[in-house]
Image 1 (cartoon, one colour):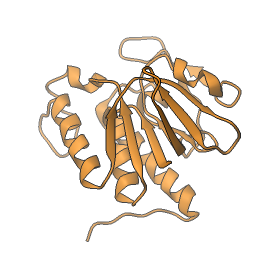
Image 2: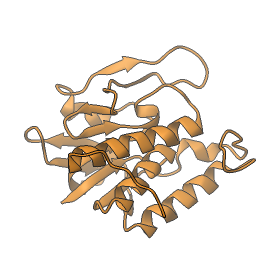
Image 3: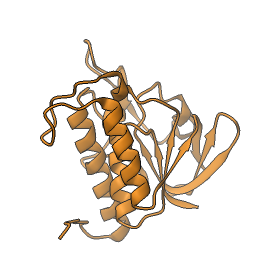
Length: 191
């Protein structure tokens, strides 16, 4: 049983996983391949770099997750379910493999069909029309919670198709998750 299962290994999911793993939570990222950010080679909206390629961000993010004890599994998530609220969750991969976890962070940017077992708990809203927007995303509260022990980050939570927004949203979801689990505000400062 993992404490945190992150569905999606793009910048939002990796940022969430870095924070939860660094906070000492047993974290597993389930990722089906090349995240959307890998399609660009010149991201310029980050304060730390003049220009960076998406695949470099993902590679660095994966290294950071692992450096804090998190793991990454290459799988396509087919379903997320639980027998009762608050959990635990069973995440099923398309090859039939299963993973169990206490909390799920949804950081995927797709049709969200894998969430159909939770359809009575989760709501969706339509994204705005236009280029570089998502068709729909999960409805969350101010702490990125979609329902009990389910958090959403990045394009799963917001329509803003920006790397920096997704990274920040992954951080926000994870900080709130850790705060909820510890029943106190989670603050992480490196000294």
